[in-house]
Length: 477
Image (tube, rainbow, N blue to C red; front, side, top):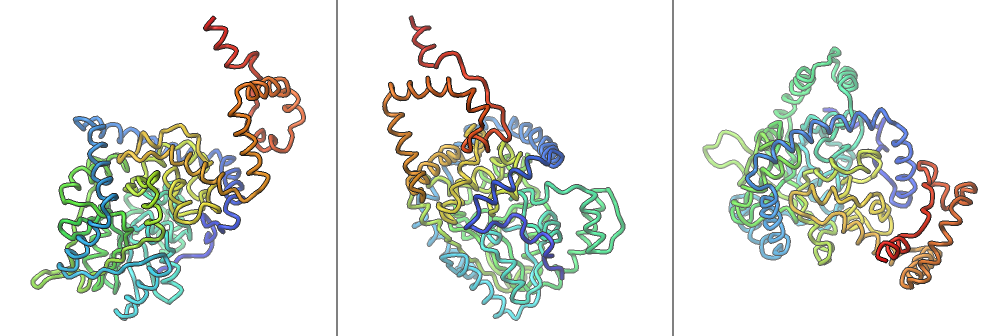
């Protein structure tokens, strides 16, 4: 079994106490790496073409977005009803449900299941919720061999890095680097062929599916009507992760529930198109429970760990509750100009990009993570791309507002109050604009500290000859 290597262990993991300073440092470093940025942009170029081609095949893409949004909105707003329905149906099918209030409790539950199963080795398919609670590190610390079976996640595990993107985990890694990585860890000859690289990983992993005692997966959706777990994937590795080990553990956030099986008819193709530019993901599987008599494969035990981890607190926020509708398609990351410039590791948290900048302050604390909401141009591309119509860029503004209300610095609070005082008085705001236009050349020359950091990567444009107000009055006259 291959465990995570320590060489990149600190990449993408920020100490909450210094998260903002680390983010600014990493962003500045990454922006200077123009080769890396160009590689990521080029990788996303093919995605845009295939996504738009698939969107054009819908009779009405916007109406499909409405239907997907409604399915998730109804489920999120009825969690108190749908979750007990799902649990009752799932347990009637032979599964067992465990409730976890936070990451610590979820890790303890899963470790207890591993001990009860007398497990030694674990095979695991892609599960961002497990990244959220740092599950791999906890299992490795207890002596369990853990291997990621998703190809991108497997590459990242060998590199000792977290996922760069929660749909395309190793999108930043070149083929030559993967070849060198496999040569170092698996002893294989160098190759530039994507097919051969895939086969190298496949040959290595096939043995591990058979040896593993426990398989761990996530869940894309939980169907309350039938008590089934829906998993969508492109490689078939999740199917093997469930089918071959004797114990299956699924880990999912409580927001993954949907009401009806029919809801998947719109959600699965929307997830595939928005996330990867596909008409449908290659493998879409529904799991109803452990192996039944007469079945040739499947686990003897099936466990589902339902994770809260501050989701109910977000549910209580009527203004931003719709962030729980996220289906983790990654579409907002793919269109975000900030993500494409600063990269996935810079965010220092499990969920990158616009949606990560919305939910991370809720999941991990606004005081330490409010800077992510400022890492946005507010262009609205994320909201336009979201297949379930989450109002992402306005939620970034909401987080900024909430951060100013809770600003720990007296000077910062005073600055916000001063701006509000000026902005509420048109004559004073106009006078400030007049003064600013005349002081701009001096500011450009002296570069005072508040402006120096901004000017380090930008040019300060020349001041307009007149204010917008003055131009508006003149044109009206």
